[in-house]
Length: 326
Image (cartoon, rainbow, N blue to C red; front, side, top):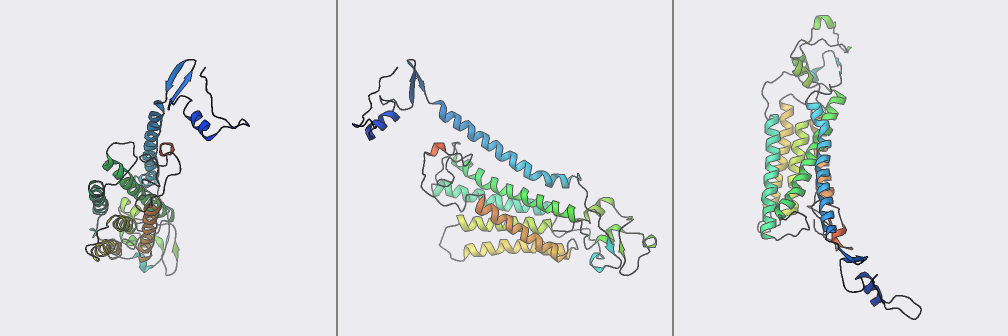
C-alpha cells in the first residue's frame, strides 16, 4: 500500500497543498493509480469517451431516420388521405387539370437542397481555411466536423418539415382546385343540386391522380422552398461577414426569399393549391427554419468560457463543449 503523508493543519484538516497531493496520487503520478503494487494507466478513459461520441453520431443518424419515417410512409402510400366530400357546383375545386407544373417535385428538391448544401460547403471551407475556426471534435478533419454539424442540422429540418406537411395533407384531405377535373364524377348518379354536400363520390378518373387531388392542405412546395431558402438566409447572416459591400448580402438574401415566394405562387397558378394552402406552407417552412437555425444548428451559438474539463462534456458528438467551441 502506498504511504501518503498529506499536509494537514493542527486540527487535522487538509491544507491546499495536501489536497493537491491527494489529487496527484501523492507522488506526482498523474493519471496513474496503484493497487496491490500494480500500476493502472488511465489511457483507456479518452478511448471510452471517443467511443461514446461515436455512439452519439449513430444516435443522430437514427434521429434523422425516425424524423423522416412519416414522410416516406405517406409518399409510398402506407396511409391514405382522408376521404372528404364536396358541395355541388363548388367553383373552388372546378379548375382545369394542367399536365405540366411550373416547378416539379424533382426540381424543387434537387434545387433547394443543392443550393443550400453548396453554399454551406463553400462557407465552411472558407471558415476552416481562412478564419481558422476551432473545434474540439473527435474527428481529425475540421472541415468534416463543421459540415457534419451544419449539413446535418439542415437535413434534419428538411425531414421534419416534410413529415409535418404530409401528415397535414393526409389528415385533412382537402381537395385541390382541380379535383373535379381529375375525379370526373358521374353527375347523373350524384343527383347534384346547388348547396348539396356529396359524401359518396364515384370518380372515373386516374386513381393515383385522384389520391393526389386529396392532398391540398398545405403546400409542400411552399413549405420546402421557404425552409431551404430561409435557412440559407440565416446561414448567410451568420457566416457572410465580409463588409466590403454593404448591400451585397441583403441582395442575395432578398433573391433567395423571392425564389421561395415564387415557388409557392406557382402552385396557385398551376391550380395545385388554394391560396391559404400556400400561405400556411410559407408559415410552417419559416418556423422550422428559425427553429433549426437558432436552436439546433451552431451558426448563432456564442462562445462562453468552459466551466469544467472540456473532455467531460458530451453535448455534441463532434464537439466536447457545444457552447464554447461549436
